[in-house]
Amino acid sequence: MSNRLLKAKSPYLRKSAYQPVDWYEWSEEAFRKAKEDDKPILLSIGGVWCHWCHVMAHESFENEEVARIINENFVPIKVDRDERPDIDKRYQEIVFALTGSGGWPLTVFLTPEGEPFFGGTYFPPEDRWGKPGFKNLLLRILQLWKEDRERLLSLAKQIFQSLEFQNKVSYMSKINKSILDKGLKHILLMIDYQNGGIGSAPKFHHSKIWEFLIYRYFFTKDKNLLKVIELSLDAMAKGRVYDHLLGGFFRYSTDERWIVPHFEKMLYDNAELLQLYSLAYQIIPKKLYERTAKGIVEYYKKEASDPEGGFYASQDADIGLLDEGGYYTFSLKEIEKILSPKELKVAMSYFGIKETGQMHHDPSKNVLYLHMDEEEVSQKTGIPLDEIKKIIESVKKKLLIYREEKREKPYIQTGTDLCLRVWVPIIKYFQTLGLKNFLKKQQKDY
Image 1 (tube, rainbow, N blue to C red):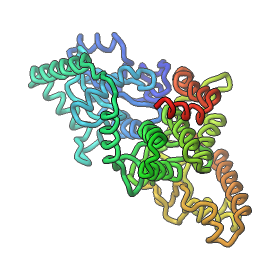
Image 2 (image 1 turned 180 degrees about the horizontal axis):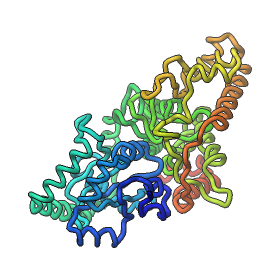
Image 3 (image 1 turned 30 degrees about the vertical axis):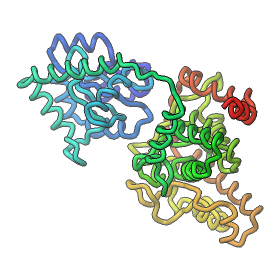
Image 4 (image 1 turned 90 degrees about the vertical axis):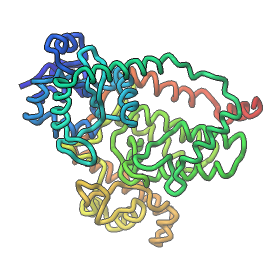
């Protein structure tokens, strides 16, 4: 039996249409219902591409007992963060202020007036990993709503007033050299000098940070900055956070060594990364950076663009029932059937393929990465470099065809409006602007 979300425009909301939870979209009807029934609101925000949204849906929102507790005691509202980024931004700020972290799925409890009093992200079905189980959390919130409502309402007022004050504060000021120097020092303290990137797990791309450092290097010729930039851009481009068969970056790495990514492909990430690697190639002319940038373009040309114009907003991480990365990963046994013995020998060195892979839910599956460059593979195998290059292209083509023909393709979400705002200006920028000449002019002005 379906719920209200069956008629939603959002594909993410429609995915929840057959859950036993009596979901509402964000609407006056939902808030009116909460006021009439004197019930708190359970707000769940996520995206069609979001692996942990799928996990929480399967574990909790498809559970009949959990759904009964929600339906009897809360007014549940489901929001697609891509459809309503304004709502997502508002409650992300609140949850971050309450817990020190944010993300998706975003889970927030509100008064019938829409004022939040508690929130978090993913909650497991039972107490686990230092997080309360979702069913126990629902029952505890319900108990407080019935027995200590005044404290919850007071807390909601305080949160609302605090955020209202923060929104009125202006942080605008003139940027001078001392501010840039302080920012640079802060960035350099955050860098992982062993693995590349910023901080530890989970590890994101942080494209704008690297752009800032590239510009800084261009003007100062500080060789220490160059080492930092290359360490991180190499690590991302060679790592498993990049799709080495077709192109395009996955959303982030779950570990500090860029080994196991979350496999969503997001337009806004790849738009920034295209700009980053195109810019980096102008300053540091590595073939790796050129190939990485071209791979992003190839992915969007082939898989994630609309024939009538525009680019799609995201591609899901999962296939089937929560098989994250299943479309992109390979076991050694699979690869042995696809490649010739000579190709297999080269592929195992080039992509670092082993009998035991990296995926926790299926240890046989390998996430491809650049374990060796072409020259190193040639030296190891004794095969001439020109032949190695041809074999690698053949390997990529065969593996790509295999995954396209034999596997379910992860869901791709259309998003023409988003792409026109984010992607097209970048394409025009590189088409119409001679970047080296632009930088030379900037250096002269500087």
